[in-house]
Image (cartoon, rainbow over all chains, first blue to last red; front, side, top):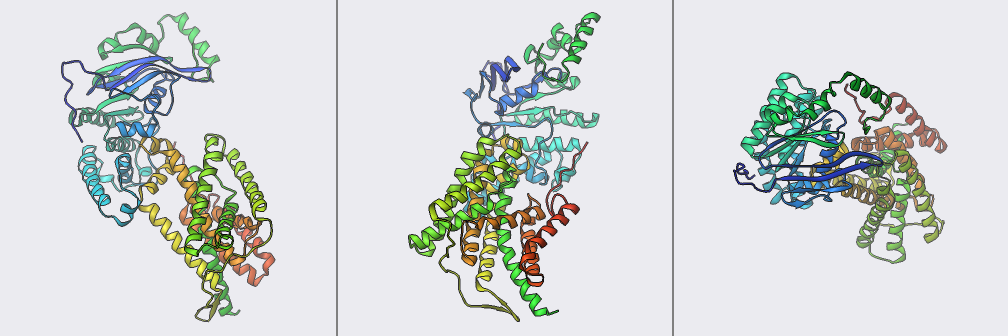
Length: 289
Length: 292
């Protein structure tokens, strides 16, 4: 695995470029003209209230949804119409908001599956376990056991079935599997949702280390404001499918638009009006104002 | 009670069960990967047998060519079915896909009757005809060799899918599609693969079933017993298919021998009802545990 160089002072093309992405489901617009860059070696966070379109954005970047307009560039290549498995091969690794591990398999098997896209062993090699199969397996084992499992401190559960693990550990296994994909960019969908304080701190440390030690760029969706502000270099704020602010954590924090999106406008009458509008449209979670 | 007779009947039942297990494996392969309940499994088996009939009897190809040709032909059929009927229904409710496979069964029967007529036919004999004597028991040679072929084939399929990357991809897809897709596994291709392999396994069991009892356009009824086997074993369980196959084979043979031929189906369906009452997800099927 190549270690990416530290982001130098010279401006270079960003690793991931989202450019004017609009995503519509029938008449409902989940994303409207969303655009931002993820610099190589950065930790970029996407935040926003529930239903703002954060996960839709993730699914568009990883290839589950096709945007109705706009472009996604990765490593300078237009990947807008590329199928998800091919994006994985290019170096997009992701985790899911609602853990999507392979249940019924062990932790080790789950992590190994992350490498699936990069293996070339064919059916004959595999059956006789010669040549390529043996080499690939040995290399895979060394890489996964020595680096990923040690790094994420999940050595003690490597042979445990994933469905028996706690939520926090499952999230960690999911991250390990994404790392086994040898990603250039690691996309984490709510990495600490539902975790206790200690688990959250562990995960924050892992995310920082992934960037420092592995040189992997991180793009995450997260609700935990403290963590977002502590970790990120760049924050993108979504509300109703649109980018309402982006910049450094400090600049975003003070942005009146952002405060309004999260807390309402501060005007009591306005807040009441919004609430009643929200309750009448409560069934449509993706409601557009 | 005549123990020798019981032994003989049980042996025949288990041997016949091997065939059920093979056909059930074909069913489970598709269900596991794609969650499609393929009602047309018996008809796909029939098409495999008719293809073998064409290659071996009509075109007079040697056996070593006729069998692979029939199996490959069925594989192509499986790919066509998946591409034209199943894939367009991706994301539709399971009942729609289920109904399509019901229709597929009728279409296949119609095709067979159009091409080969509805007459009963015999497949060329290719299995040894030396009677098999195990201890005191006599076993019909075709049944014995059919079971042997089935077992070898099952073992081969299991080995390939245990160690080959495609098998790993299939298991991953069965477990979590979205995750598999984002891991770089080409899920649509896994779907095709499952249907192709399933059709090929069905063809092999069709050839064996046909060479034991002859072939006709109503041969798809065999699929009914296969459905019982997979429901008893658990729709998504390979182990269930194997154990269920042997078990149903045994039940059928015992009921046929001690109660009379007309009780065979009654007995298997009673077993089905009892199993469904006790374990609704089958003997080895996974039952989803929701964690809140």
